Amino acid sequence: MDIISLLIFLAIGALVGWLAGTIVKGKGFGVIGNIIVGIVGSVLGGFLFGLVGITTGGLLGSIIMATIGAVILLYIISVIKKA
Image 1 (cartoon, rainbow, N blue to C red):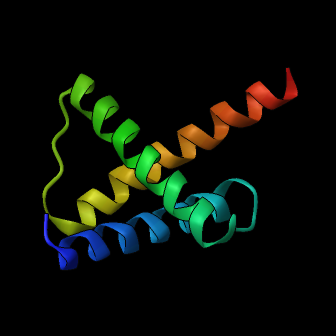
Image 2: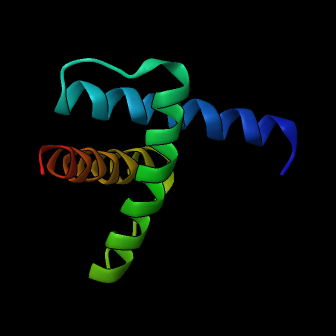
């Protein structure tokens, strides 16, 4: 992975984390928090979509899949925090 790919990966992670934070809590978590939520959410979304058998194509499909995974991740975190 070259530096440009890494920067694009982190930018998409930040975008997805911000989107998920906006959907779930109404605000973001800062740049680093958004990147972490976005990256972990994209891995979770990819895993869950793979279990169901849904494949996404292109950048937009990947962003949607990652956002859904990040929203699920934030929901799980909120349930754990309440317990």
